[in-house]
Image (cartoon, rainbow, N blue to C red; front, side, top):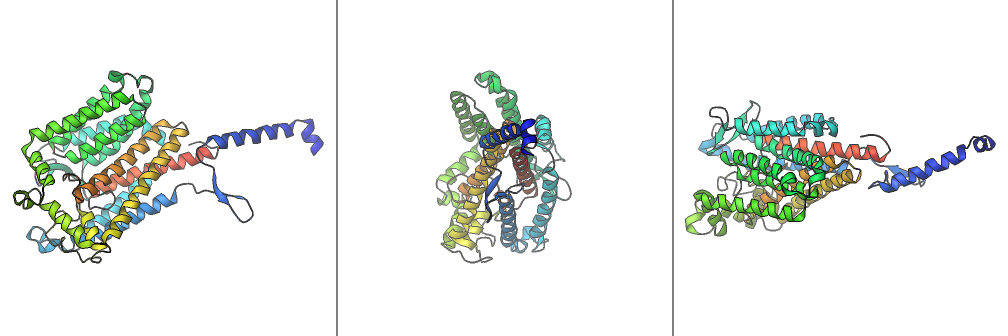
Length: 421
């Protein structure tokens, strides 16, 4: 056999193949194994990041419990008198079920398909944001028109717009890679798209969603390699636009003043009411909390306890330990999303990498804003806590976005094994 392989040069061919394989494995961002078993053989990694998936499942389970705890007493209020004590629990569980099925479908779609349809998805998001403003079509709650009634849930187009912006900005940077050093050719079209989506969101009004979408767009521009001076100029223009909106809107200006001094008698029963009771809830929680279900602030003192201010209920019932655990979970989730995105870029999959990092900015940024609002570090924005707060469309789009992250991770691992995405 040895003479046969030497005669036909198969030994040399095998050596060259092994050397090429070693060089290819050294070039990829991670190895195809995590360690070695008892016999010294490499241990193959799973086809996807199971830790990320189980963390998301854990956050969804915690959110289900806390939404039930925060909403169980709402039927005692005349506003919710016709609802059962399990109404919000049932609706939230149904939203999670619908979102999980949709995510299972989304994870089957190749990233190449998402890249192809990214601009059209962005256009669809813009159209839905316009449709929601049409009288008798969009549903209004507390003076804001943000939802489209779909029977099983009220869909919020701004949640779709967050994912659409992450995809569109990543696609845009891939298409404009050769002109990213020229301001008007690289940044101006994206600025126009952001201005259009901003006008639609501010007409609802939904300034919180606009801030998240703007941060996603700027973050992807920065990660895509836009000139630093251009990036900071764009950032300064955006900050100036926000300052102008606040200065020209009396109710936004009053909200800022209430945030700066919520305990002032002028604001404590008005614009600062939610913040003061949120801070009271955190203060009552101390280190270990009052115990699951033992929150007092959720008993009609803290408005929107099951949506925007769910973290305050977590702080009161589970204490500093519970809040710290949630923060660490979101920190790990955001970091892991960025690692997957960086791996995609290293594998020359720029669209996938930038899109995933945009989703990471979305999850991490919105969590940070929600925490800041609950703790009094930021003005009230009306943003929910991803994966935890009550809200069907928010859960749906968050799980679809995370399913796309898992799909990118699956394709990354396939490429690192020498296969095709």
